[in-house]
Length: 128
Image (cartoon, rainbow, N blue to C red):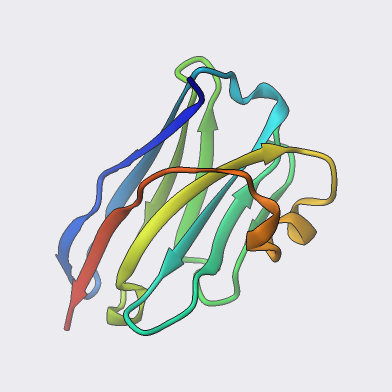
């Protein structure tokens, strides 16, 4: 069974850090790009960061550039999202998604409808 499970969310004060994990089972990540997306209260789902199958190409949304870092551990079949200098605007449910890496990562990341496998999400709340 193909599955993605997110973990690591929680409540943190502004300026703090969290590390999210996206664990894949039922398939290996070597052929799949992984994206992190979030949906804040009353907002549409938006891209946060994406990494290509081999990890050589990475995209960050402007809103998180310089604060978030995406990485992939192929041996563990896990993708991480390190989030530093968190702001209240980062609050939301964070989902990871997987899709075959068939187009440039920036183009993939900007198309939430392109991704077919999604995790259930993990809540991140940043207090001011």
